[in-house]
Amino acid sequence: MTPTTPSPAPTPPGTALTADEAHARLGELTVVDVRTPGEYASGHLPGAHNIPLGRLDEALPALRTAAGRGALLVVCASGARSAQAVERLAAQGVPAATLTGGTTAWSGLGHELDRTTGGRTPWPMERQVRLAAGSLVLSGLLLGRRRARARWISAGVAGGLVFSALTGTCGMAKVLAMLPHNQPRATDLEATIAALNG
Image (cartoon, rainbow, N blue to C red; front, top):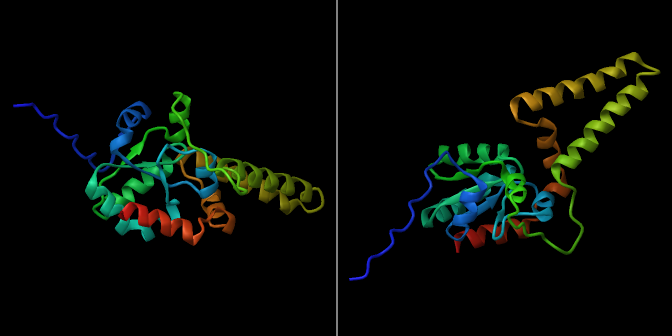
């Protein structure tokens, strides 16, 4: 009689995998990248499906189906958005794990990232936030030369950045993620949901 290797247990909800652990198990994981399409296109885990965090609810039935077939790994740039997604999924009874350190940790260890080619892709969210925050601070300072109250724009952005660093959240990124160029085309999201259901 030939001994059989037990199949790996599904990842319990609310857990995290390191980049090396995820790399070793990549073939058995369904990977969902919750970043914007532009961030996803700039580099994602091989085989990852793109469902932006703001569109997670639309894909919930497909994610439940995928989690029923095996372990679900949710990924973002740093692990903050994927941790939020894992919490939301756990609240709906869908077990999932997050990638500790996100794609930043993954690529930092030398693991391969796939890139989407063709067409113009939006900047990564971090770059969009830096542009928006810098523009608002500069505008507040320049306008403040004529109207002192305009300096409050700069102060508000600075306060928002400090709050973002302390809480690990980013309100500006949430607002920017709603812009049309950061949304997946309906056909892309439909194709992703179909692939997860398949």
